[in-house]
Length: 34
Length: 225
Image 1 (cartoon, rainbow over the protein chains, first blue to last red):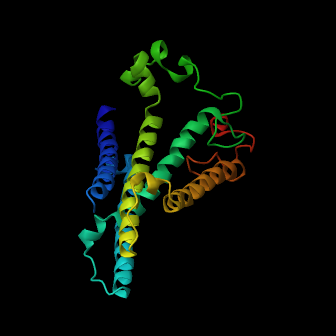
Image 2 (cartoon, one colour; image 1 turned 120 degrees about the horizontal axis):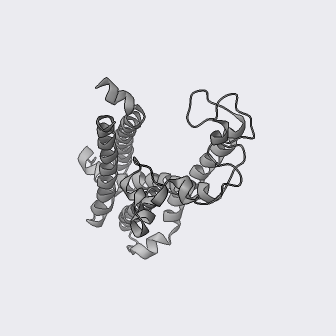
Image 3 (tube, helix red, strand yellow; image 1 turned 180 degrees about the horizontal axis):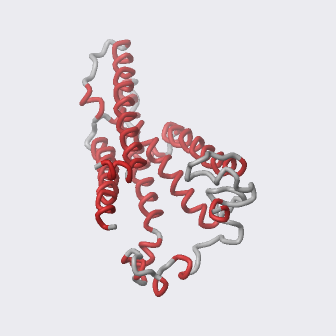
C-alpha cells in the first residue's frame, strides 16, 4: 500500500513545486521590472 | 516502472500536455512579438528574454488565475449548491459540509484516515478545507501576478506613446486589467456550467466525470453507483 503511494506523493509534490515556482517567477520577474 | 506510469497516468499526461502547451505558447508568443517589433523597426528579442518578460508572463498568469478561480468556485459551490441529476453534484438534501460521521473525522476517523482527520480544532479545520485553501491561494497569487506583469506591459506601452506611467492601484482599476480578467472568467464559468448541465443527460462511457451510461437522468453519480 505504502510503496504504491510513494510515487503518488512524488507526483503531488512535483505539481505543487512547479506551480509555486511558476507563481514566484510570474510575481518576482515583473516586480524586478522585466 | 510500468505500474508507476499506470497509477499516475492522468497527472503525468496532463503535466506533459501543460509543458508542451506552455512551450508552444512561448514560441508562438515570441514569433508574434518579433513580427510586431520588425514592423516598428525594432530589433528582435531572444527566447530567454521573452519568456522572462512581463509580456509573456501576463498572458500565462491571466489564464492561470481564471482556471484556479474556476476550481475554487466549483469546490465551494458544490458544498452548498445542488444540480439535480448532475454527476458533479451531491444529491438534493445533502447540501452543506456533512456530519463528522459522514466525513470520517474526529472520533469517526478510520484507522487509515489521514492523521490530520483524526485531530481537532485548527488542524482539523485546516485539513477539512485544505483543497479549497490551496486553490484559493493559487488563484489570488496568479491574479496578483497578472496585475504586476500587466502593469509593466501597460507602462512599456505608455512609455512608447509618451504617456505617463500608471501605479499598480491605477492599473488594477484600468479597463485593460479587467478586460484580461473577465474575458477569461466568462469562458470558465460557461464551461463549468455546461459540464454540470450536459452531464445530466449525456454520458461518456468509462469516464469518472460521467454517470454510468444506463444511469437514470434524475440520479447524481453517487446515487447511481
